[in-house]
Image (cartoon, rainbow, N blue to C red; front, side, top):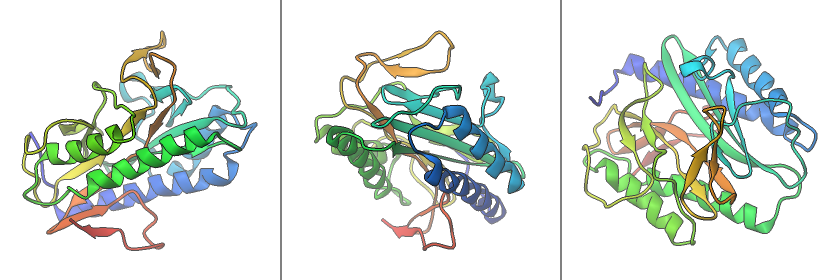
Length: 258
């Protein structure tokens, strides 16, 4: 069942989303060669807790950390540990925060030091595909209109998306209905309505779309070892478009019309 959120719920999600954005913002100056993924996780958890929230991911189905740290060919759900980031790596950091029972969720891919032009291009296409999908978020459109916009943009550059990992609804639960694939035909699925809250998250492979899960039962990698990137925002459907919730609200207005 897909729920719409009240103004009170949306305001709590704005706060949760801004805390997620603060955690991402706090990382930027530290994301250099030599940092470990555990260091990243420590920064993320500190910022979340200092702002009166709890990490959404820590303990979720047994996940042991506050952030997912996914390097190079790791698509999602990388577990922070003693791995040291090297010049030329790319890393996707996925962060969730729960504030007074409501969640915000956002992932971003970062370049560590000097990365290849190919990696930068993958990152840029993946990031732009998120915004191509968001252009379709408005009342009266359907879920698969978002999916189609993301997939067609990605495929246009010769990249692929994994079939089994999707965006999702979000609110009092970290993962709610509906699932939001990053590919598919338009005009299908549920109608978007004002007050729906969605985590839109393109995940893109430089190579083939197939994945495998490592023996820790969490870490998802590209089966062919190709690079992967991941961008995600939590948004709420408004009267005529959407509002991004996972941003620093004092920097700019993130309300958008379709």
